[in-house]
Amino acid sequence: MKKYLTRLWFKFLLSRKKLIKVDDRHRGVGKTTMMISTAQKGGHSIVVGKQSAYDLIKEISKDVNVFRLAENYTFELKGKEGTILIDESLSPKMVSYLEMLPEWEIVGGFIQKEVSENGK
Image 1 (cartoon, rainbow, N blue to C red):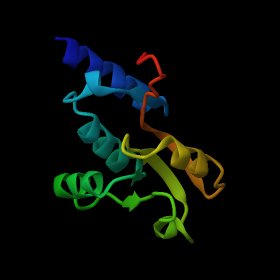
Image 2 (image 1 turned 90 degrees about the vertical axis):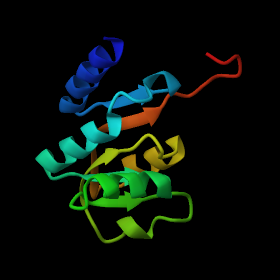
Image 3 (image 1 turned 60 degrees about the vertical axis):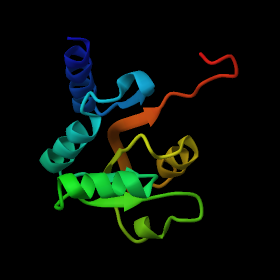
């Protein structure tokens, strides 16, 4: 029941173009599937920070535009523009980088909740 409610809440937040903070408690609720569906319906691309996330998204849906982005690995975005969803595999530093690019508009997605030194 809890996963179902979390899934509904995440769908609502994605429809409101929010970046949703997630952690290990949110594993297995369907975030990737929700993001792919949102991308397909809205014509958005998805930006990931890991090859494994890229591979998973392409395995689920070959028609979704997916860009890989990491420090010193930004060429896939050069010369392009549009609306993007953020995958939780993208580092906070690279999310900040994207927010500074006028040719890209972040319209939602998932970001890792930062853990403080005391673990909260």
